[in-house]
Image 1 (cartoon, rainbow, N blue to C red):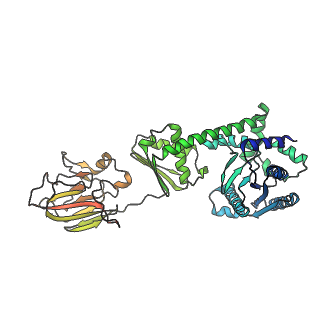
Image 2 (cartoon, rainbow, N blue to C red; image 1 turned 180 degrees about the vertical axis):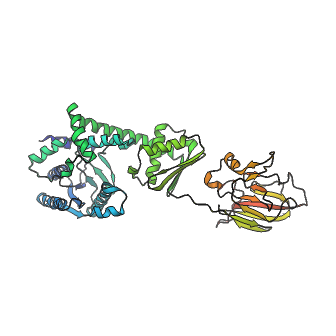
Image 3 (cartoon, rainbow, N blue to C red; image 1 turned 180 degrees about the horizontal axis):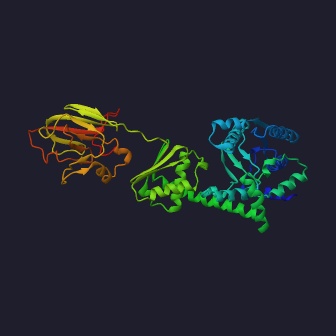
Length: 478
């Protein structure tokens, strides 16, 4: 029995990769790795009690050569008496409508094709021919690129996929053991000459770095595989802790996540890092290829900055902005706020752009106290009509209880009002330009110290606009 067969049998049993009655779909390119895997599984299908199906996708990138690969795989499967499902997709044409580059686009269409075949054949596992040398290359490339957390583990030996999972039974092997298997069984795989071109990063690792490591230690691939498996186990444990902690820290919406910074900063740093990745994976729909360590470092710099606000831009239009104790991740563009100004006379009511309304009544004051969302003005102290507007540069207010005046901008800062709310926050002024009220924030000196019974007053009320559930009153924030 060849080393290939001994090792693969042991590897499959150790990790329980294949179960009886599995319908196994093998992704076959026609190269040595996938051809040897298909041949082995077909040869052992009765021992494992499985059904084997082959799938081949021609990306049509290499013209006639890749078409010959397709014909070769179909012929090989006929010889093995294996059902083969193949398809041709012009990836170079699809590239026009994609922002992922040729490799990313090809990968997306390849996985979509495999999902189609899984559904069509009712397969529950997809087997790939990645081997131990591929693992070394992938781990080193990702570490060099700056990949973090479980991405550093390289190629997982299994992962969930569509209606089942992807498995990689050859990760225990070296490339030479696969070539030895092909030679022994007189398999004649197709060879893609582009695999030898040093123009590609992976090929440079394959031709230069991996041989050097194997000279240092012939069992390097075993150590890299153990590193991968142990790291993934550690990550799974830490990920579980992170998911529990993050639930108390964030609020999810369709394309937006709001994080409470004070709670987030109390999390241990390893969980903070993974928490950021959880948020990004959620928003990018589990496609973490858009994010690298530079992006996560930028997010941490924003969060830890002593400045109460700031923002950064991430790929595909994702914005992260900090405002006091909140950090918001969103694809929604910030609304451009138009200047607004409404005239308010007695017994009138206006709806404001921030979802609130302002109502003005003229009557004798009969309350025992003034509510948070109400302002009392003596009819003799103001010049009507009132104006409700948003802020203007240089606005100053004579605040009740203070000597002199204070900039409205400073009031917003002191009250920790987020920047995006300041532009729509209503300001009440009279015809002389005096600022009478910043609703729910500050009252002016123009409000009387106390109400005199039987005197007539203007009573301003600020509350949520009418909804199907009626009026929402006495709101202190929006």
